[in-house]
Image (cartoon, rainbow, N blue to C red; front, side, top):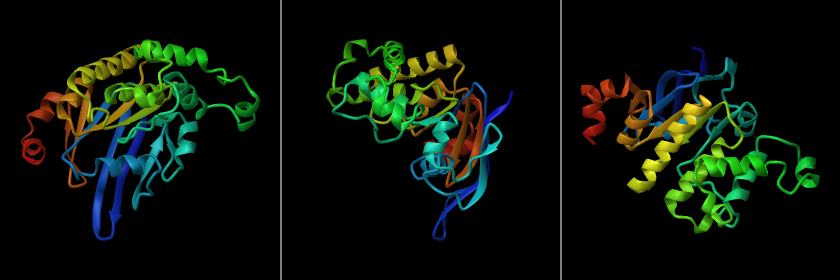
Length: 247
């Protein structure tokens, strides 16, 4: 199975402190990889280095074999890489449907087509399909800022998948979501993976969410990978119990 994402010996230092310290892993086509670890373990710094928000101190990132180290997020978008953020990126004054259309525009079309093309940029049907898939039909015309936090998380995920990306990286999707909405989010992500054979990476502090969703799990502690494997083996690993559950 080919690797969609390859990370080799990635390191990011701030002053004399290595937030990410020689991390290497790959993400295989069609898998859901989870990256967990206690707060301060380097998860978000790792994500931001992979996604161009931060320039790594050392190491290399490849997407489909192409070196993308330090590439701007907008250029990664054009390669089919999408993401969500810990802090929601929805537009509160726009409707659910318009948020999805705007997300789709980020991945296609030119400035001229946005200015002079159809009002929905030709993305209305795709937005409606995504709304239906994430079961947001009853909220399609509602301003995103009026949604509950969990509903906004669902919308945020739908926006990340709007353009049918090659690879999606989800940054703490479970953060702040109640158990009912958390179950709905996990079920929709699993369904998307099953139906579209999508490839995505989830970084998360909430271990149970990752263990139920992901097929393979990496554990970070102090910027290094301390364990890797299927959820059950990772859960019972003494290093994980000490470094993660002990916090």
